[in-house]
Image (cartoon, rainbow, N blue to C red; front, side, top):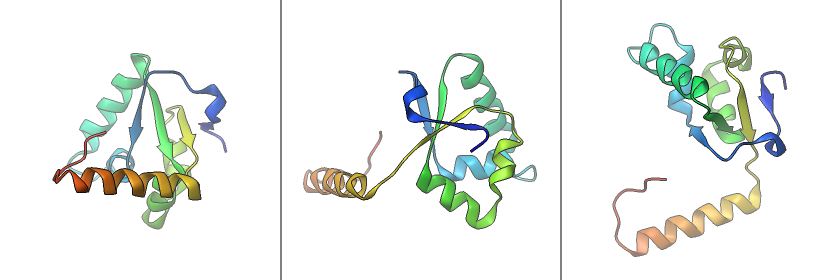
Length: 106
């Protein structure tokens, strides 16, 4: 996948981008496009890796094209999301929910 890199190449410092960030980054008509682009540029220039989960890529591709991400000329690192990750995430949500927290910040 051009523009995306394997997990073995990941650095310690990075930011996991969600679907809405990807949409605003690539949609020039978005009110948040300028902010998303500025943030991605800042992070890239200051040593942060830009991580994107395979789920976020799939969600993004519902309304966008994979090539739209590549055209931004940022170096994205993909993070696989497999079945056992889903189970771990669900267990994490259950644990947080049982503590009656209303928001999750990762």
